Length: 459
Image (cartoon, rainbow, N blue to C red; front, side, top):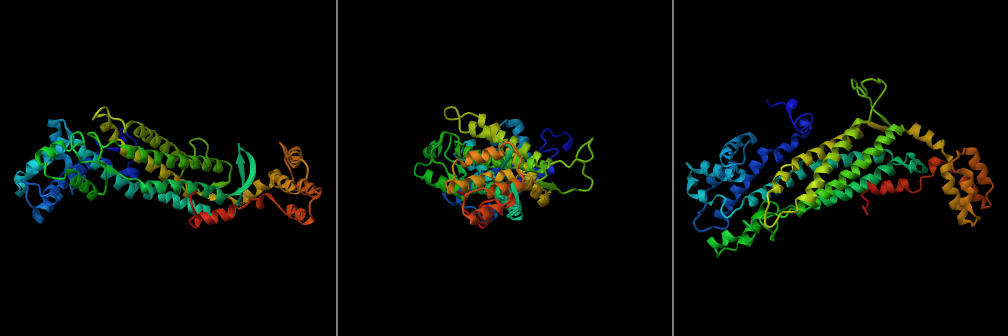
């Protein structure tokens, strides 16, 4: 029975419609299709580029026919699974599938050059490399950039809207909504730049990385050179020095990069959750939605909560990848194989996290009126401004005087202005301080937002 109601993983059940974009890259059918792709392209490369003795030139029709073996719907890969029931070996089943397909075709004379010189890992690592590069470029990075765009829009909306800051959970020097959002924006941009620069590596050098079989059969061939060009043709970066497996260091790098980005978004999700709770942001109502099964008044920030939870799950997968995948006993053990099959799960939870954050952002609006009232209730935050100006004019113990006036106490506008009039500083400075309000005490926040939105540097 195939239905989301009996799916073991919520990625294929409750959230199937939200993660379906990854099926073309990380489902079982996708792995089979990409393995066929690598096998077919290697055969074509042996014949066309290396011109390996014993092979021959392929006609355009034959090349098109071979490529059509992998350019099919995922469901057409069932034939490989039927063979695997007998072989109990996933990659060998690919080889047998291709040879059976070629048996009554004009390419039948080339069947023994299918999988020539290859170990299973040659096919598998390149398949995962292609899938990962495609999924990152077509699904994951666009989803991240959608969140980035929404954050930029919120920063623009809040560019000059003052907001009470909180350090240690206590009222602190005011900031602006735009500046707090831009802080996240610039952190994310830095991680995205690193993701876009991430190399996806691949190897094609045989059973223990020495081209043993290749060299004994054809010692006259420049196997490292030809193999590396083949890898580049697939859009990957060659890894020359390996055991039987590509060592997966790049996967650890990518995992840690995604973990950092996800952690930044978790930080953002939690802050947005608290800002909603403090009424700094109002949530747009949607007809028919229910906030609580028992409390009719509630409008919960569930999208930020869902984002936080899914990004946490993603990071649990990614953390294991980073610690486990670069380790392989001696020249090879198979413990990486079952782990690699979960790359799609990790990216699925990433995708859900990004979608949740994006949906949460689409439902919030800045409550300017509440923010203004909140600032007006906390004139004590101007103590920093007063004592710093007092330092400039060498008034003795300015910090201590303001501490006595404000620590643990409320401060009204009247109290503030009375204190300003007692200061022995130039009259122009007294007037400037007297005109100051919590909403105006935001430093260079607006300028910093403008710089960031204009494409400012991330560090």
